[in-house]
Amino acid sequence: MNDTGRSVQIRLMRHILTFVSLLILTQPAMAASSWPKQNNQPIRIIVTFTPGGAPDILARVLAEYWQKDHNIQVIVENKPGAGGNIGTELVAKSTPNGHTLLIGTVGTLTINPYLYKNLSYDAQRDLEPITFLASTPNVLVLNKDVPAHDAQSLVALAKSNPYNMSYSSSGIGTSIHLSGELFQQLTHTQIKHIPYKGRAQAMPDLLSGRVQISFDNLSSVLPFIKSGELKAIGVTSSQRSAYAPEIPTLSESGVSTLQNFQVTSWFSLMGPAGMKKEDVQKIAMETKRILSLPEVKQRLSAMALEPNPHGPEALKRLIQSDSKRWSKLIEETGINAE
Image (cartoon, rainbow, N blue to C red):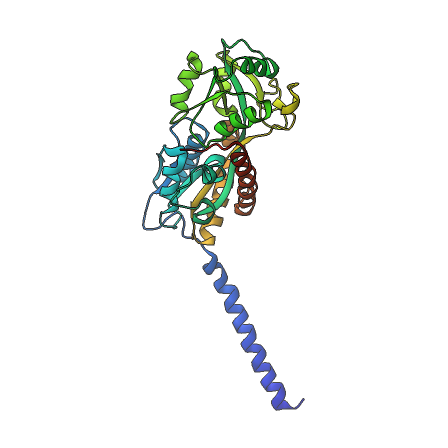
């Protein structure tokens, strides 16, 4: 190669190195997220049920730490109604800037789309998965005066009195509701479903005996179990809960058709579709940091909530798999929200 050729090659290499250097220098700025401070706009976390349940607890934990750590206003808004659809729709139609977020549940994300025929939004198309938050098994509980002490005696009692017993839920389409439907399908029993606007409305009737049964989140009913106000028959997870190991699973109850009974209530953080990828990653990382704090883990553990902050891809897969499962049950049982 002559001197002219070498000179051209050297200049070309310099140009390439300069271009690569610029890319490296600008990449952090391109990937940076301005969340949560955008024009000092407050963050709204929408909870689709009344205060006091696991979704509300998780929202308030995040709000407390985001507000303290970032010096920004964080508002938790309870928007119950229509099985969680009112609050979910609000978020689905919000500006995707990371300042309106949703505590998503197994019901609002994977059950309601198949129960409600005229939703104005598509949960998988119009919402952005950010991160899995926590999970808790449901637990089959009875009013203390119900003359049954295990799953076998409850099934026998329900079969002897079709539709004479009732079970409560915090709304149509919740995992509590579908747990009851699955139980009836597997045990060939007929138990009336009584939906309430939220747990705060359902619990007094369960404790007083106006309804006899519930498949509530363990995190919500554990204090009543410990006090003896409710009888725990079995958790709906595949294994006993570390938070209440004395309660058997329904799978080990002795009722053969319940051997594969498994339902877990889980909670997630969602946003409107179209959020910047950088904002999704930043919020997911901030959430994981908070849920990993020892004092937060201890606080959630006291309520039988297992923090598990997987990111958006794992959450997306969970939504897809649970959607297939619950849509099949809804089709088989013919239940609807009308």
